[in-house]
Image 1: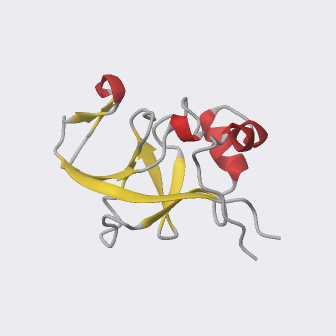
Image 2: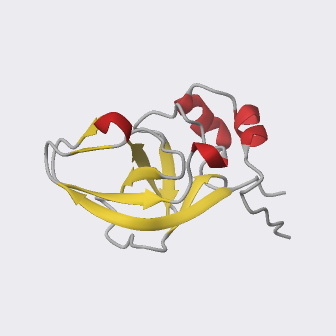
Length: 128
């Protein structure tokens, strides 16, 4: 039986130069040139609000990480090493290839708490 997947997609991209900051309170500072993907999912959807920079995500099946604080409706991710990532590219926040337990450990919580926190506004689809 497949695991529950929380997925979304990239809704915007941004190029950062060294020293530029992003996220609530400008908490993340780019140490060099990088490309950021903005993902349509945030703590209002049930993603853990305290997940720090470095929390793993999958972009088109390739592992990368979050950068900056989790926003209400979006998460920023590092897509510098994923040149094929663009607006509309699928992002797995947890699920096949990235366990909810691993994301929970990075965020200092439990996977059960994350699964229970998913908001009613998150569409649910059953896959056979």
